[in-house]
Image (cartoon, rainbow, N blue to C red; front, side, top):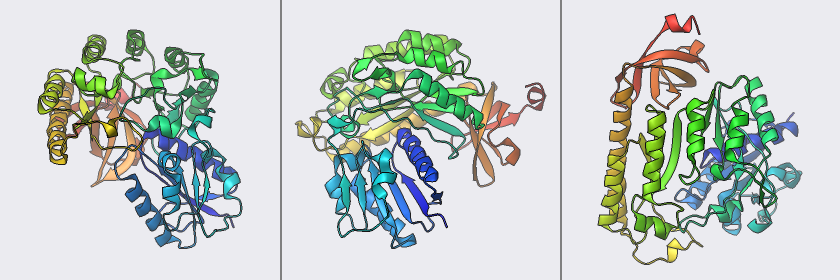
Length: 440
């Protein structure tokens, strides 16, 4: 009887792609994958260091795993495992902690699943992590996350990612294209390109050997994939030629997610971001000039050390005036071994919370305004398999979230629809267009 393995993923799309690839490693070794809320011989928890309360979340997930299988072998991987291996090793029930360089050799490390008195830690210094390991998610959901880049050479004062994932490095274009072809052959219709700093794609063996634009051009020729989405890209790396390419490409969709972090130049300088807000505004204007219906998402950090109320209002007004579609709002929290954690001018927690609430309200306003501009228009929606209260959901090319009464025949299908109304939950209701579907 095959041993069973279960997975739990905290954090970003990149983590999901890597968990899926680790799952395939287990499958090749003869393991059967089972849901996390069921009995398993091995539980693998892929952790994140960006979100708050990493230790608390890790402890809770370990505790849940042991409820299902008290004698299971618990392995922790991911960014938090690289940053705090000894801390994680002290969590009751943890058997093994694997750092960034070791997680893809997990089968070799697990061996015979013999539990020791103390957790085993395999964690090389991050500056010894040079290899790019490819990954993509498949079978988990309608869209597939394809890892094209890892690590980061930037030194933003608030960020621990370079400490957790190492220097920027990428796969070869021909290898990534081959993976995209494998994904296409599986029936997946949308690929989301993911990485830590994907605009910096092209570094191998410490040298720049390719450009992100060259990767996009190659992927645009992959047959069998209907859509390719760029997950997140730094504004200073989103060159005009990339925007122009996406605007006329066959498969890349009109959706950009650009982290801003602050709309105040003084705060941007303290963060060591590599642009000023004027460049960000130029990028948004360029996108909208070529793709008026393009969806633009923005990452924002509130409560950074030294951010005054005037600085925050500067950010708020900057965002309010721009033609953007939604915000991902992060409340600043101190991270060990970062420059920002040592800065003066800590913003009180209540003020951080108030600023976050203001931007969440602004995000809802921006999303609704973007959706309202889509009403009456026709778009293609890729439906997903989730069902809630009798409804299923999907996304248009420009990331409009729609809902429709559940129909199993629509799962993983791209359907032409007319956007008709916006619900109280800020989802778009639709009218299917069978006359278009018949000719598609």
